[in-house]
Length: 161
Image (cartoon, rainbow, N blue to C red; front, side, top):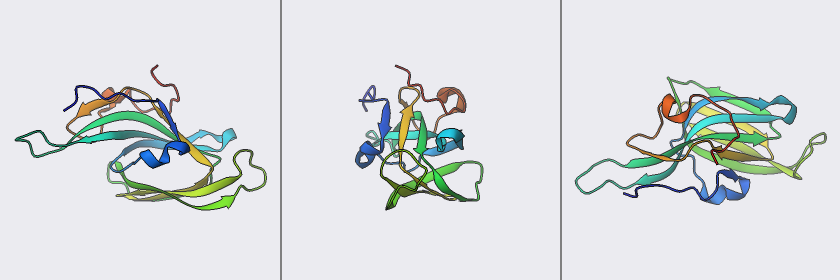
């Protein structure tokens, strides 16, 4: 197992989509980050790496970091959830590119973004996202962090560097 995990950048965006994956990310909170900017945010534990079990071990371990995931120029937000204590993401999909609606400044297009979760689904239209890591990754036996390890609930956009 590697002794550390180094992030090559603290802020990821839609341009990094191909290398990202949200499977088993834990959602701790969600809400409008900035109503004037039409942004909807998630406070998540993002799994950066799944580590194969060491010889003689049965279970994976994980490099996990708290992050703020913010969707930009959000409209048509739909939440259909039945949470049972926590929300765990299975996948984040992006499809249905459309020209940007009048009244929105930004990129020429938006997409439908769908967070498929074990507890239901969250979908919205947005022009893209940014994800800010708030602390360096830590190696854990579980896929989520304790509140103390992650600095509590936060929508901060300030990386630690």
